[in-house]
Length: 226
Ligand SMILES: [Mg+2]
Figure 1 (cartoon, rainbow, N blue to C red):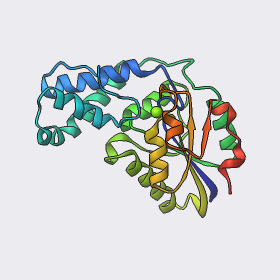
Figure 2 (cartoon, rainbow, N blue to C red):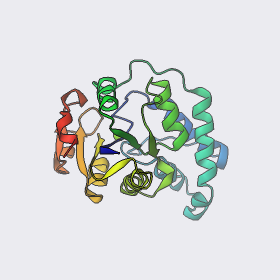
Figure 3 (spheres, rainbow, N blue to C red):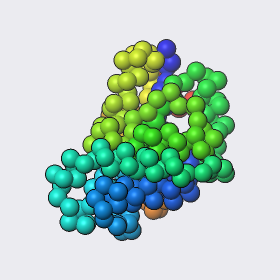
């Protein structure tokens, strides 16, 4: 059992500049399932769950919410299928310090997981293409709960049920958006914010994370343990 659990957001936290294929996949899902041509322009995708992005795009195209909900599984599957068919290798897109930090956590025996708005197969493929495949034991992904706080709750429950972490393990959530900070706070776990995403100046401070770092090269491993 590990005395610490570290949960990572993906976009803007582990990797960046990988959004093109992801946005294309979301648009392609809307086209395939509803026959509608739409874009993510004007939608504040940063920090959002993929199903929420899809919902906003379709509401903007005057699709009824009940119909969107009913067809969400098809939308998710279509986005994943497209993403897996087009996404190339994604070299040089790690945020600073990520591979070294993951090496250190592996050496310490830390349980490391994902809490991300990416839907499952997109999240896993993105990390694999970025050279980070096999680094994370498990994840809570965009389609698994209605909010990021709900995703964090699922991830924590899973780690406990599997017996991966000690009962009083310290749990941290690392992310680049206000939503990541709120998700940690809703679950009573440590919030570590990083400035490697596109969150405007001041917005992270306003959420009062436990730690706010320029990037992950500044993470002191001591704060992850009691
Ligand atoms: Mg993010």
